[in-house]
Each structure stands twice: as structure tokens, then as C-alpha cells.
Length: 356
Image (cartoon, rainbow, N blue to C red):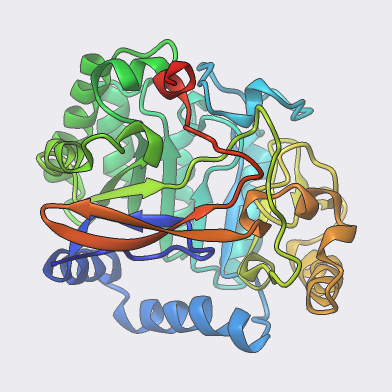
């Protein structure tokens, strides 16, 4: 039986059997079972009961705000993100030193750019590991993967690598411009080969937009499961037209879970503030701990008081929109999922934009 494991805000799901789910959980918890269980408890229940950890549970770090793709669905094509560069190694180490001091669990190389554009990425992963950070994530489009980079990354032993891989064949190429499907699939295999040799406990995950696989989700699942440990799909976000139906009762769990640091050191409340509408401070001038205890505290209070939409990034955030149920059938099993509610029908991205 398959089940749709929800993410923090109900819009990401996985094609996992229960057996696969527990196997993947064991892989993720390897070497840190007790701290992982405590992290999972805090991640799930602290937002629910409005409990605040002394330091973020997760820090998204943008070592690169640049990207070498022009993806059809990406907010970068429709917004001014106000940065386009690489984080200095000096700033990165300053951030990681503080994170290590406060026993941060997850450091995620993610946000608005492509982390594999940073030439020091393997060194950065290794440095964070040396500072005691328990879990290192890397989100990548995969287009820059080479055998040397794959080996370098896996020798540094990240805990999780997600490649965004939207659909198969022509659908993939209509979204992930200018990448080619077969070349990207080979790069995924290169990652798997290096993983198996140097870092057997690193989780390999792919994620796709739902509209890229909706015509045959099981074909996508079977194709990707030949190479990776976990296959996930996300609800489509429409950044070309902002036509969300806001949910006035939504209280975002991210404010109890994480902070984001851009390539220039600006700290943001969450990874959906793409245009830096609300900068909480800069790591050159304030500590992450200070911002978590003060500025993020104010953001939490605003959400609890029902003033979410007083915030510019929160008002236009997809995660704060109403959700509608959607049933997905895969391998003759139904997965109960959710989609964002839009003011009018949204067929999806890539080839879907031209379909009637």
C-alpha cells in the first residue's frame, strides 16, 4: 500500500510503501537515532503547541543566489530576487560556527539559487559535518553534476540530496530549460554510483511537480525508483499569475521550525520570501540566535494573532492559501493529497500551459 506522506504544509507527498518509508527513516536516522527522534518530535509538535526551541531546528542557507537554468515554473522568471551571487566562505563558516555551537540539527543548502554553482560546496558540507551539525541537505537541479563533483560531495557525506526532476522526456525539457532529459537522468545515475561507493547512508530523493506527471504518475515512480531511494511530488505553484485563495486561519509552522540566510547574509523568516520583502537582519551585524529570539518571535506572534496577511511575503505565499483535496492513483492504490486552491483553473506548467 502506498501512502502520501505530507510535508510541513500539506503540499508535498511521497510515493512510498510503509516498508519503504521505514527503510528511508532508518537511513536518515543512521548514527543519530535519539537526536533524530527528538528533532522529529519538535518539528511536528512544537508548531502545533506553539513551543519555541532555543534555536531554529533548520537553517536554509543560500550559498548561491545564482542559477544557470530558466525553468518555466520558477519564481525567478517572474520576480526580482535582488541577489545574484555566491556566499563567501568566510561568511559561511561564521554561520556554521554559530549553528554548531547551538547544536543545529538540519542545515539545508537551498532557497533561491543552485548550490552546485558554488565551487566550495564539498568543502562546505565537510565543514558543517566537522562542526557537529547532524543533518546536511542539498537541493539541486542536478544539471551541474559531474563525476568529480559527485565524488567530492559524497566523500563529504551529506545526509540527503534532492534532485528536482520534473516529469519525463519532453515534459521535463519543457520545464527544466535548457536541460535534456536523458543527460539529466545519467547525472542522477552518476550521483547514485558515487553514493553507493562513498556514502551509503546518504538519502537520494527526487521531487517533481504534480502537473508534470499527472498523466501517468506510476511510470514516473517506477522510472525514478530504479535510481533513487524516495520519490516525491509537489503541488504546482503559479508564479506567473498570483491567483491564490488565501486561508485567513492558516498559522505557518515554519516560524517555529526554521530561518533562511541569503547569499549576502540577510536573514529571512522563511524560504518563501523570494523577493526579500522582510529582511530580519544580517549575520554580519546580528547573531542567528538574536534574530530567532526577537524578530522571528514577532512573526510568530503576528500569525497567532491572525495578522498573517499584514506581512507582504505571507500574504502572497502559496503555503498560506486554502487547500483542496485531490486523489492520486498509483499502482492501483489511492493517495489522499491536497492542492492549492486557485481563483481559476490552473492546468500546470511546461507542456500543460499549451494544452486546452
